[in-house]
Image 1 (tube, rainbow, N blue to C red):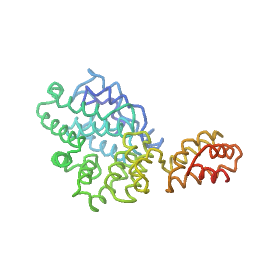
Image 2: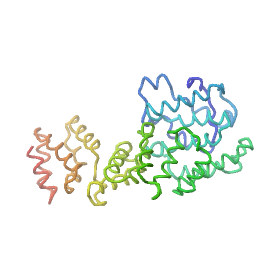
Image 3: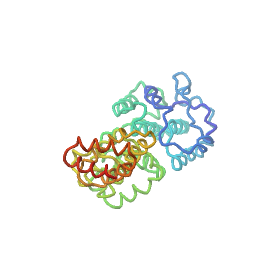
Image 4: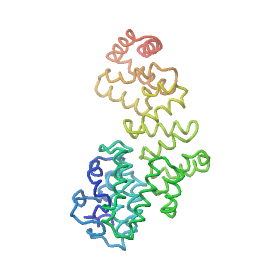
Length: 351
């Protein structure tokens, strides 16, 4: 069914086309290659050009097949992560059936994934501006009049969510999307509204939030919201997963601070903290290239008080000291260092 989407219109947000397609073609967490070959990304940039069919026009889509196509899109997200364009394809299908609130949500999902991964230059300001423009009468005029209130209500609920007005967002989302699929994007947003409020961050909501992780395992904001609101080790685990997905993304810095706090470190130490995966990438890169200078990123981490990440990095670097090139480099760094870092590097360089 997905293959029938040979040419679907971008049903919403003509003013946001430059933002949407600035991230097209940059992969996020992708499905396996064989699955992508079977289900190619069903949105062509050419279909989004103004004049290629407006709302409710264009696209040879058999309406009777749309429910099955939507389920296929959902299953692709559950089993292989998200690929740019899936949200736009979903939006086109939902608009074709008159589900304008669902179409707005699908476009917001597309932008949220791009922003969360730091892809394509999508900014929070651009998303906010796009939402405002969608509610503009000139843009609403592109849609059937009976859809105007639904579109405006969807924009308002999403806007409340983006601004952290959790109670208002929850009410609006529940009104529009309360009957949506159990692990759909509106459901994730509703769960976020719950865990972001002090009275809703209890074990039951945390359990419900964890139950949908299969669909959002490659979505950094999913992990970020859990890191912000879950206690203890769970917060550290969620923070580390968020960082691993997008080390330079918009949520990484706060998640490093959360991770530092769960390790008993000062917030000021967060910027030099590295996850186990980041440490492994640095060490592997240094070994593959035979270049000890690549380990320099780990030296500030090695100077921190004892914590799991520092001990892991120290052990990884110590294993390299058996190689003369790495041992000599580590010894030179130890001679120039001071305090705790000097002591640790001396230990590391001895292998």
